[in-house]
Image (cartoon, rainbow over all chains, first blue to last red; front, side, top):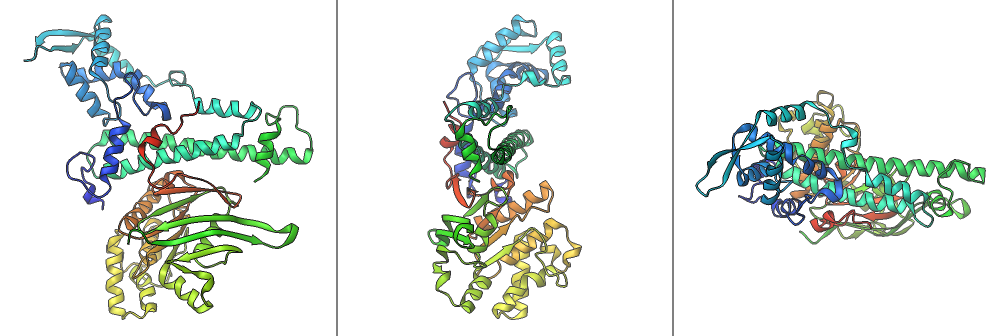
Amino acid sequence: MRSGDRNGADAGEVPQRVPRDAAARARLSGTAVPDMPRLTGHTAYAYLVAMSIRHGLLALLERSPMYGYQLRHEFERSTGATWPLNVGQVYTTLARLERDGLVEQTGESDEDGKVVYRLTDAGHAELTGWFATPLAGADRPRDELAIKVALALTTPGVDVRSVLQTQRTATLRHLQELTRLKAVADGSEDTAWLLVLDSMIFRAEAEVRWLDHSETRLARLAATQRPAGASGPSTAVSTDEPSDEAVRR
Amino acid sequence: MSTGAVLELRGVGRVHGEGPTAVHALRDISLTLRSGELIAVMGPSGSGKSTLLHLAGGLDAPSDGAVLVEGTDLATLSRAELAAVRRRSLGYVFQDLNLIPALTAAENVALPRELDGVRARDARREALDALAEVGVGELADRFPDEMSGGQQQRVAIARALIGPRRLVLADEPTGALDSQTGEDVLRVLRARCDAGASGLLVTHEARHAAWADRVVFLRDGALVDDTGAAPPPEVLLTADGFG
């Protein structure tokens, strides 16, 4: 089956499992949300990339001068079409980059009269700095899931285990989808897309591990509390609901 | 071939002991595994995963409900018939020690066919084909201790599905392997299911379970959740849509 999947991610010939995967990939990269790519809701990861459109465009212009539509095409290609841009986003970003002196118009235009942009020295320096600088924790989006679980624990009437399980199932579905995409992409030469997929797979896996870990922690906590009769001073599981739930295992 | 249930659990329960000290290892489990389907079972230790696999393989009998392998209720079989079903309809892959050390890969895979009554030469030919299908055709004449853990697991999968066998029960088959090798084994299992086999896989690795068509979650002996068969992408995209 492996060899049949070669280049299966491209829309051309269609091995057995591809139709569903191709559709899934198209949906994953759907353009319905204008400012935030579609995977955002789940992984919050794409947010990071949306933040990086600026640097993405700078990186593309480092290769050669391009006009907006070309930039959009190349950006999508180099992220495995995971993060679609609309051309308006591209021009808005280019305008800001031009205002900041990081890109400039070459004065040429293609046959349709589209303006061609190139990197300035300042833009080149900005790009070099970006690649050389690690992302700081604070640059990343807040972890809504951790916040939700923490709140579930301290909110009366909320069943934490059910919150954890609902998320685990959802994350596993996500992981299944990503795994299918990977199975299709494996035979291809699309290294950029494979790297991006791996990253999303590891994130989803880490989330499941954290959910498992949280459940175990809650169960242990409940087990140590029960013999004592009363809940200790610093225990978060002080409402009846979650501890009953956790004790049941 | 696409509609038949290869394995069906109907309201299966398993109780150890009696009265107030009775332990419910499994409660009211219903699950259908079809041809070409790979189902992963996830759950913490003690949740009943292994009991489930033992019941599915006829190694243990349910206290309630019924286990059907290829349409046959195992409870209706004599001891000898049950042994025959175990031997002819399904194969096991465990975490390790799957192969007989004194036999080569080809001999290990051919063995069930020879027990089926197939002539040794034909059994060997089938074994060589089966080894090629799981990508270790060139290792046919190696002994288990001359193979890596991942290669041994591939051989075990080939043996589990040799001849008429269409159902593989795998208990943490990647447990002793590094991450990449484990994934390669899952790929093989996935490919064999795509080719028409059925697999029931117990694992605690989410990344490995994700190769399955469906993932079910066991807690305290009960199925608490299920990713469903072939989740539509719409579900994925709105999956975390809590308020």
